[in-house]
Length: 258
Image (cartoon, rainbow, N blue to C red; front, side, top):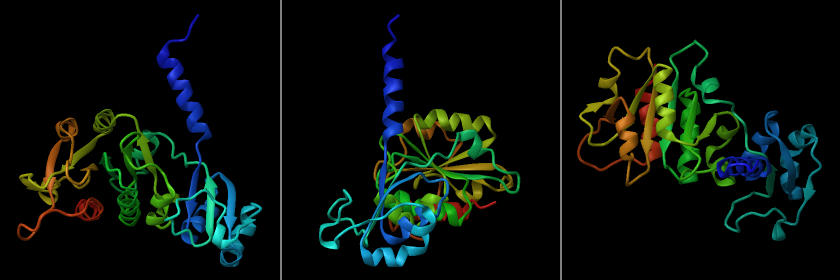
């Protein structure tokens, strides 16, 4: 019996994902990845100078480093990448299921950050750093039209990518509905909203909360807005415009802390 097209497409997507690798670069990002036991490491390219600075973690990783001339760096990176003489080929991290991440450990009300088509890896990297600082359970984005796990994202995240769960889901609205079923309160950030984050959480800080942020410019899509429990704004003085999405995420996480 011939397999349906959707089954074939799903199997092909799984094979592609299994073969997918990422090149991380920069001393900090490479060091953190080498130190992460959950990270599957494949190939390490370094200059002699970088190897001296990474010597301890390279020895512990068990990888045989490839020494490269800094003028003809062997890793397949964008020429504009500030690699500092270190690049590491890895498999993307597997953080488990949404349920594993979102249900929390019972020590404090969980917080999540959901990103609606935020595509800039530098913004997502900065959001991962803020999520780690403020104790968010995860940053969640869609598989398409969102920043993938890349070297640029990892470098901006400054190590947070190795520790802060970054989940990619197929459909954001479906994920939001699933979170509602788990008891989450979904707050969508909108500069024109009537109420502030603090007002929306008055008397409800013991709830699990997911903060939903859209891309700069278009903001939240209509379906995303409709699926939120409430739209909220970051209180500001004067009509100065709006915050960069990564700054907005940091302020919102601080305002929503349990």
